[in-house]
Image (cartoon, rainbow, N blue to C red):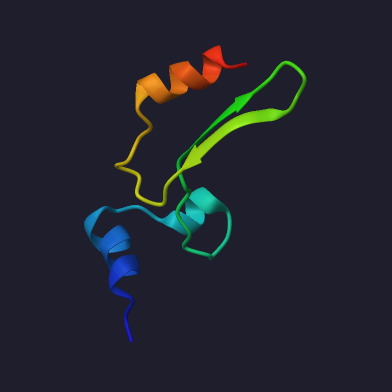
Length: 67
């Protein structure tokens, strides 16, 4: 049985995820943002499996100002 997602990437987009990932996992990265304080502690994290969702800049500015 052919995997439609693998077919889409290989045949339509001409992208070989194994070449980019260095393994045969066919996984996609999850976009994330981190704010790390000067003390090395993570102060803010936001991530979404939907790459089209981005944090509101006002939220990031507020998080930066709170440090």
